[in-house]
Length: 216
Image (cartoon, rainbow, N blue to C red; front, side):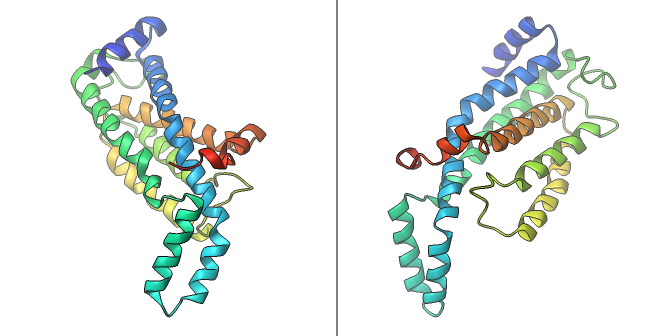
């Protein structure tokens, strides 16, 4: 498993397993950033074509077949690929499973001053602090719009509902998971939150609006 020597190398550099996990998370998220950027561009494109899609739904509300065909044409015109939205999730799934396996197998020899109330990384959080923080951060990141200028294709009520549904989902996954996995998830969520904030800057908006590179 390539993660074991990489995490060990980072430990030798940081002299703490907790910091090593944070550095590993940063490394993984930087590798995934090009894919994350492409997904963000797809979200921006979908918001830009929203008025046209709304107009189509009104025009072909009684003709579902024509609506599907015309929607497909608009997607092709602007380079929108709805399935691209799942890219990051599909890429992160095997990484998450590899992390879980790593900490179950090797976590008993790891600990950190960052989590002083847990003896080893293989244990779950007895106070459930980290699972709650991880779930809350994931909820906050999903609720925050990509950019004030880009917005979202779903309503605020839908975003609130989706975010609230994510909390029990992530709590279910992380409640009894190795504490290091919660640390990894928290660091990844913070990176995702910083990504969202970056897209609100001039540079971030410039990256999102590069139409020629927006296709996935």
